[in-house]
Length: 419
Ligand code: TRP
Image (cartoon, rainbow, N blue to C red; front, side, top):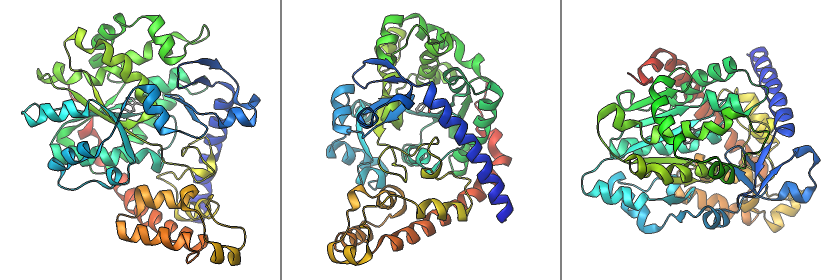
C-alpha cells in the first residue's frame, strides 16, 4: 500500500513538474478587461503575480468576483433566483446557500421558459490535461443536483483537442487518454446514464464539425482576438477552438429535433466562450446559452485556486489517504504561530484554506459550520484539530469516490454520446 502510494505520488509529481514548467513558459495571459499580454510567468514581479488574471487558460492573483461580474457583464445571482430554483429542487443546495455560485447569464430566462413548459439541457465540460482534483468536482456536483431536480439531459464535453492545441508539450494521445480517465470521475458522482452524454471531442468530431463550422463562419478573427487575446504566434488550432466549445450549446436540436436552451454550470473563467457564442446563437436559430457561474475552490496554499500545477495544494481524486493527510497538514490556515497566542486571540477563518473546504464541500450542516467558525475566531479550536477533521472528511469521501470510480470502468460506455 505504502509503495503503491509512493509510486502514484511520484507519477503525479512528475506530471505536475512538467505542467508547472509548461505554464511558466507558455502562458497566454489575458487581463479580465481584455488587455493582451503574453508573458513568461517566471519574469513577473510580486505585484504582477498578485494582479488578477482570469482567462479560460489562466487564473492568477487574488480573484475579485464583484469586479468579474462588472467587467464580464454578467448578473449577480439574486436571492429571488435562488428561491425560484428551489421551487423545483426542493432545498437550497449547499453551493447556493454558501454562495459558491454567485453569478449568471439568463438563468431567469431559462426559468421563465421552464415555468411555461419549455425544458432546457445542461452542458458542462472538462479539459483533460491531468488528473481530476476535488476543485473540479464542485460544479459537477451541482450539475448533478440540477439534473436530478429538472430531469434534464447533460452534455459533457471532454476537450482533448483543446488541451492538445493550447499546450506545447502535451501529445494528443496523452490528452485523449486523460479524457477517458477523467470521465471516470464524472461517472463516479452518480449521473444518470440515460440522461448523460459525454462527448470526447477527437473521437466524436463527426457529430460536432458541421455546427462548429456554422459557428466559426460567424465569428471574426478580430472578435476572437479581442475576447481571448490571441496573438500573431497563436496557433490556428487554438484560434478555431472556441467554435468547438460552442457546439454542445446547440447540439441537442440536431440530435432530437427539439430546440431548447442550454444552461451551463461552470467556473467563471469559461465565460469568454459564452460571450461569443451568445452573440451568434440567434443568427443560427438557437437560444442563447445561459450560465450559472461558480467561484474557484481555493487551493491549500495562500490564495489562488486549486491548481494542478501547484503540486501540494491540490487534492486529486485518486490520492491515497496518507498523501491527503500530508497535503492537508501543510495547508495554509488563518492561525497564529503559537498555540498560546491563538487560544487567547483566536484565528481568522476568512483566509483559511481548510475552512473553505468545510464551507464549500465538507460540512453540510450550517449549524456545525457556524460553530466551527465561532470556535476558530475565539481560539476554542486550533488549526491541528481542523486539519485532522478535514483529513478524515476528505478521506471518507475519497474512499467512496475511488470505489465508485473503479466500478465506473464497467459502465462508462453507456455514457458515451450515441449517434
Ligand atoms: N474549456 C474547458 C477547460 O479547459 C473545458 C470545457 C469545454 C468546459 N466545454 C465546457 C468547461 C463547458 C465548462 C463548461 O476546462
